[in-house]
Amino acid sequence: MFENEEIKERRRKVMARIRDYYRVRLGKYTHQRISDEWYFYGLGFVRGEMTYVFGFNSGFFKKETLPDMQYSHVGVNVLVRTNGVNPQLRTQYLKFFKHHLGNWVSGPEQNYTSFRGGVGIEFPHYKPISSFSSDDDIVRYIQDGIDGLFDLYPVISKNPDEIFDKVVCSSAPWTESIISLVQKQLAK
Image (cartoon, rainbow, N blue to C red; front, side, top):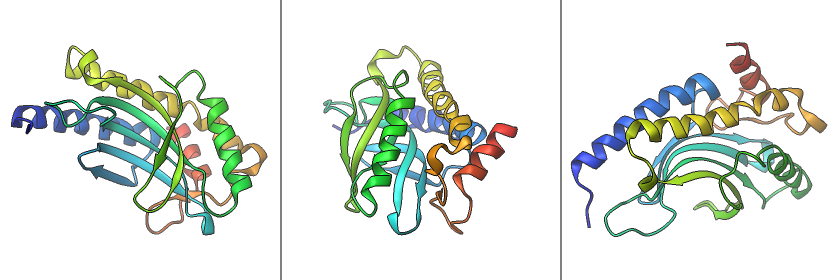
């Protein structure tokens, strides 16, 4: 069944509000994705030959099949890629996020795969869309998830075990380091 235009317009307005909050708290997003599976703004990070290492995504996600809705959940996630070059460092990223997101996640870690061959772990901060009574409630929930990611910025800034060296935002010109980004956001 197709969604009606009113639902699509409401979702678009929620995402416009999220986009602005995302930029203010976390920094300018590096990508926006819209598909049958998700509608989100994300900030991805790469490290040289390792390519994608992790990312932060906020928006609407399809986590279960519902007959009248394209997306079933809203919220924020952290994706950590576990396959690829330098598995030891990838394990350190996984341990870092597992440790620091323990009270933030809303459910168990999940496996994810990407269309580019990436495999990893998804740390979810989601709720079913049906559990919200208004679009304002949805916006507040996603903002709360974004705030939880912002709470990681002081720890990332300290660069524990130097794991964030050479990690940059995944957008051209590929020069803004995560350390620079988080320090800039913390100074606001």
